[in-house]
Image (cartoon, rainbow, N blue to C red; front, side, top):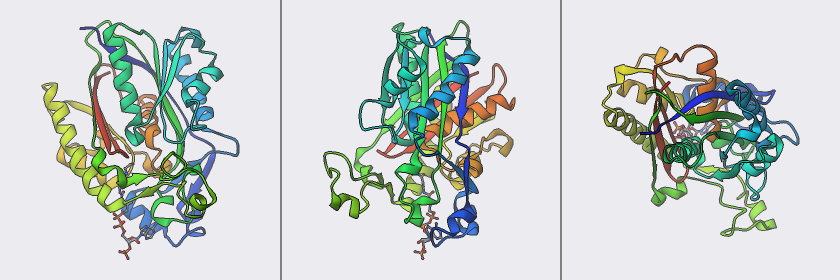
Length: 326
Ligand code: UT7
């Protein structure tokens, strides 16, 4: 069967660093609380005028260059984001324009923190079916613009960044072995931006109620995330006839150190086999997996033939996983 393969990755983080001690000056919090409860020490914040497609462009440019593929050769651009440049047009169309990828179809996927893996699922399906050959898959977020900087329960968690991957058909047994995507809309209210859509359109009232910012029932989300991610990791391995010790690396969504550790413990993976960079970047939603993947590739933590498990969980609720033979 035709299979897709990630041939290159790229990522981009804005320069500005916001540390936990900076946050101590904004809200009633402490470096100790944030570090213990989340593992986050600092996060990156986009500069004025820097939107999701600007970050995506930088990550994509690097990924395409590393792939040796010109923008004009790209057949499809699929972007996972919940903090796009505008409600419409899609951030993927802005990115297409910036790259000059004039032969690509471009569209966004809204699956919150699972956005990159949803986009990977679509790209993998396009390639498997023979519809497309060269696809750019991106996760990009400027969450700092939808974060309530007066709400200590959320503002300590999020950061900005972008990651990209280039997929082409595989010519051997390496590549994307399987991608699994799931949703459960009954738990839609655990993580939302309630304002700005057709339910609660922008008005002075919606702004006064701060409805245009992220709201999260953190503790409830935490419990579902731990259960779901452990479950999906085990099932994804089983579906591919593998066991956890076959894995070279787990690349999880970077929401909370304790959630990542719970999955690692369930799989009995030592910490060398788990990518964790949320101390530097916080939770960058759809961007977190491609950023972590790119860092792992660039630092030599992933070698040809390695089995890599990616997994994510987020608003919707949505969750997803992918098993890759690199
Ligand atoms: O990426 C998409 C998916 N998202 C996630 O997976 C996030 C999942 N949730 C989490 O990571 C955690 O639930 C949080 C890090 C958000 C919160 O940690 P928690 O251990 O679940 O804390 P909590 O919400 O139960 O709050 C415990 C206490 C509360 O005080 P009381 O009621 O016990 O007096 C909070 O008010 O901590 C308080 N608190 C804070 N204290 C200092 C909440 N935020 C802060 C803060 N600084 N920033």
